[in-house]
Length: 262
Picture 1 (cartoon, rainbow, N blue to C red):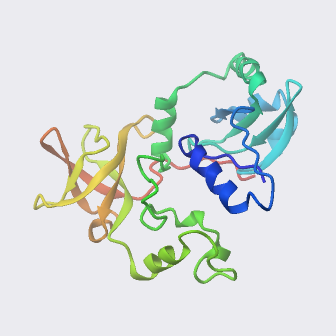
Picture 2 (tube, helix red, strand yellow):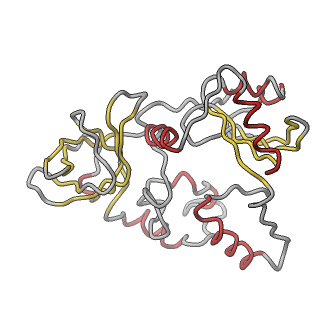
Picture 3 (cartoon, rainbow, N blue to C red):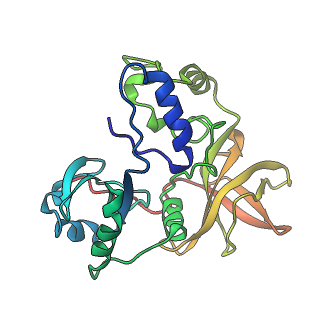
């Protein structure tokens, strides 16, 4: 198994793996040995295929060992932007050369985390430490899709993973709050930490991520809302610098995902 973990959680993820299965297999951290490059957007397949033609036939979430500039890489047709693209695990010593080679292609430009953040928000994707943390359950975070169907309460091999009983209980009994999409009804961006209130100024939630969606051409946000207010199209308000900004609970993603599924 080859795992790509959240960078902010890598220490505790490694400790958990070593504690749980370290006596049964060799758990090898590759944090220093490898780097990860993300090539995202509608031209990604055309660009990477110039270096390795076989990547053009890959579909969303497929992973393949590929030679790039003579280096052994792991290439996955995935990413955290909602766009088609690839994540490339490359030996750390070869990462700069590969990055520069990709940047030499006319379609490729460098982006920072701010650009990535605006796209993942438009795609309705969570950012650890903002939209979820170790105290959040998949049911609250609207991430139940991450639990394999076979492991869910009605699956053939139900449970068997940390937190299973708590998740099954929440599925059965419901939760007090849920992560939802939020569309500001004016041009004012609504940022993380803003309180969310109902028409009577009762506090009903808090924004966990927010900003301007460049593809949508409008502000977008996500937040945790009391479950009784979480229905699509519910009218609410965010409090921004003492002013109430009208919101509407929205389905996600805000912009259709463009993953390549063949």
